[in-house]
Length: 119
Image (tube, rainbow, N blue to C red; front, side, top):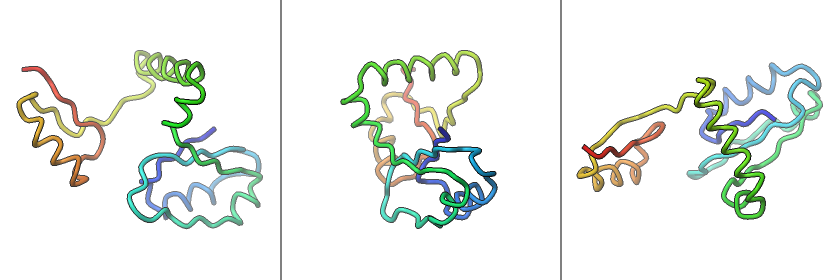
């Protein structure tokens, strides 16, 4: 399954769907934060490419499928140790700046992870 965050710009999502060859990515998962409007998708493209699009709500998945969720997180941690995935760190802040961190997150200024450190 190819997973795409909902914050991907619609033109990038459309380009991804257009670039697929028939059956190349049979299932695409859409997940992430919805901060207003969900991008409109050209529904004819998955049909023509033999693909399906599945909405993913990780919180509900974790609650209903705790063993599968634990296995997925363990695999993700393994990929991290192998260097296959690298989280985007927006900023590192000392713990005393926690109120500023919450303000940045609340105003959607964070792109990636905001890491709090004990200094």
